[in-house]
Structures are given as C-alpha cells and as structure tokens.
Amino acid sequence: MAVPPTVGFDLDMTLIDTVPGFSATLAALGEELEVAFPVLELTSRLGPPLDHLLGEHLTVDAIGPAVDRFRALYPDHAVAPVPLMPGAVEALEAVRHAGGRVVVVTGKYTPNAQRHLDHLGVEVDVLVGEVWGIGKAEVLRREGCTVYVGDHVHDVEGALGAGVTSVSVLTGGCGREELVAAGTHVVLDDLTGFAEWYDGHLLDTRLAALERDLRERGSLLVAFSGGADSALLLAAAVRALGADRVAAATGYSHSLPQAERDPARDFAASLGVPVLTPETREMDRAGYRANAGDRCFFCKAELLDVLTPLAEELGLAHVATGTNADDVVAGFRPGIRAAAERGAVTPLADAGLTKAQVRAASRRWGLPTWDKPQAACLSSRIAYGVEVTPHRLARVERAELAVRAWGEAHAVTLRDLRVRDRGSHASVELDTALLPLRPELEAALLEAVCGTGFDQAEVDPRGFRSGSLNELL
Image 1 (cartoon, rainbow, N blue to C red):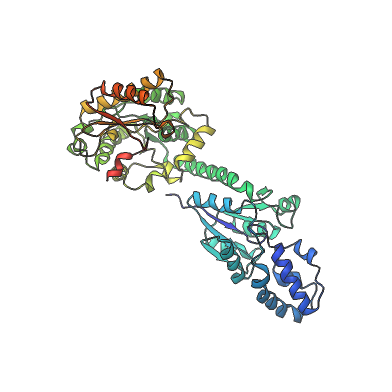
Image 2: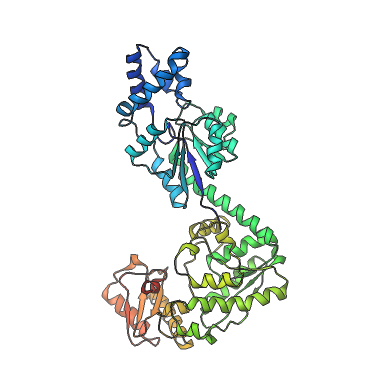
C-alpha cells in the first residue's frame, strides 16, 4: 500500500511574510543596542540564521546576547503583523486532501515559529526549528518527506541533500536564475501555483509507481468490468507489459447489465486485448442470494474462484482487480476482503491512485472511460435482506432502461441513475441537480418504472448516492 505523502515547507518568506515582524523587532533591538541596523537590506535576504545576519553589524561577543534579546522581543513585535503568504492555505490543503502530512522545517527559533502558526491558525504535523541549509536534509529524511518547498538557495541545498523534490517560490530574496543554478527542480512565482503543480506531481509519481509495480508482476489477468478503474488498469498493464502478456476477463452473469458488455469488449479490443467472458454462478451461492450485508463477499469470491484457475491456464502470474486507494479506506467492503483472501493483487491501490486520479490519468491518456459514471452490478440495486433473484435483477435493468428512455423523451439529461428495489417498491435516484422534478415529469417517470414490473415507485428526494443502500448497515 502506498505511503501517504509527506511534504516539507520552509516558514519565513515561504508560508509567512516575515518582513513586517522582522523589521519591527530589528528596529526595537537596534534602538536598545544603539545600533543602526540596515533594516531594508537585512529584510531583503531573510532566510539565513539570525546570527549570520547580525554578524556583519556586531562584534563577535555581542552576537549571542543580541540574538537572545531579539528572540525575547519577537513575540511582542513580530507575531501579530505577520500574514500568511498568498496560496499558503491552499497549498497545505492540497497536501491534506491527498492524505498527506505537513512538516515545517525552518531556521527560525522554534518557540517563535510555533507562535506564528498558532496565531495564524495553521496546524502542522511536525515543526522543527533552528535548522539551516544542509542541516534540513536530516530532518526531511527522518520525516519521510518527498517534497520540500522553500524560497532560498539553502532550502534547495537541504532538499537535494535529502534526495527529495525541491520546489522554490520567488517570494523570498532569491531570484529564479539563482535558484535554478542551485539545482531546484521547480520554480513557482508563489504558493498560489502549488496546489495545481502538486496534483500533477502526485499523479505522475503514482503512475510511475504503478508502471514499476506492473513490470515487476510480469503478466496479468485483469478482472475487467469496463468501468473507469479496471479500464485504466488494463491500459496501464498493456503499456507496461505489452498486450501479449495481459488478458482481460469479465464474468458474465445475471448481475452484469447487458448495456455494459459491448463497450467493455470494444475498449479492450482498442488495446489489442481480447475479453474472456467466463460464466460466473454467484446465484448458486446461498450467501449471495440471501443478500445480507456481506453479499459482495460471495460475488467477488465466485469471480476470483473462476478467474484464478483461468489465469493459471493462460500462464499469467496474477489476477488483478481495479480496486483504487479510495476503496480500501471506504469502510465496509467485503468484496475487497474476498479478493485479498484469494490472492488477487490491487495495483491501483498499491500505487496510491484515488478515484479522482484514475479519472485524471484516464483523461490524460485519452481513454473514453475517464468520465464514465460509476456502474455497480445490478445486485447492488436490491436492498439488503431482499433475496437476489434473476427476476429482480432483470426488472431493475428494465426499469433503468425505461428511466433513460423517459429522459430522452422529455429532454432530461441523466448522468448518474439508480433504480433501487426496496422490496415493497422501487426507489429512483437521479442527479440531485434535477430535483425536484416538475409534477408532470415525475408522474411520467413513475409510470415508466411501474410499467417494468414494479407495483409502486417513488423518486428519492435526496438524489443519487453511490452505495446508498449501505446507509442501512
């Protein structure tokens, strides 16, 4: 499983604009010491430790006491006037959104650095102060950082020393040419560009991890539903291994909608991979028919029990599912457990690829499935505790086709749609933006659904929710 990303940030002139506070504190210190510090000059090159900056203007013996006094004056003069840099909040949120950790590594006196974070309401996972230049490398390695963001050539030095990606912003005292000459990998004008860069960087990193993983697998049988996840996995496997070392298999049964079958075959054919269509008999499993909360366990167990010997027969080393990184943290997923017990591999999840990244990568590669709505099996439309039967599955499929025909007839664009069999009636879930329907439209919709074999039907006022039946568990 992929390790959550950890990103390191410098503080002064990277996350916060230290100039107002530093200037005020330096002026107060100069007044006490009766030294005319060149405030503008010193604030134009913030970043180095304080003793380096003051050393040019004080005797050697005076530097230590002056640093101590500066730190003592700092809380009263420097904390309140210092703002966050533009884009700082969004940059930290981008890391959090990816499930990552935020580490601040700064040359600033640690208690004062913490005061800034507290005053600005910024929460970080780790704060390490009073380290500079190459000394930052040890901290970055220890914390497992993969990226370090700073504004100074010495921040670049720390990142390169740790072997991580160096991102530099032009909000400090160093210019673009100077930072590039120091070896930084990326230069941004400021942190407003970080979130977009980081999203792309993370996708690149995870796709590279996926490719490495697939190459190490050697050969693969992909459990192929035709959805966005398994389609990306199949395309990635062909890229990494070649079509002759990859096969796709779709289990045909009553639970697979007819409408999903031809597009899946066509997609695989476009990659040069034939789709094997073994019959699966999940309906023969009592646990599947009973449709308790663990129904998906029996369905996935049947699929893997069919595909595993098929892969062996074809001389393929692994059976892989399209499980993504979101799936493995989504809570109750008995199907994932069944696949894991049978030795199926999950390359997308192992690379850390989320559903959003699956779609982004698919779009980048020009795959037609990049924006395909989720299309779970027909049995997922039947409420838990209501027996799964071929009749019920066929009736749900007819009802969804009838709703789509209703949409075309009334110029209603449908993206996400489910007809749920709740035992006593059908519940129709439509895109929330379409709700509430006009009374005449709703009446026509319910008439269409009842015409497929349901005695009663209703439109769910909460709209489409993937896995809404799980709300009852």
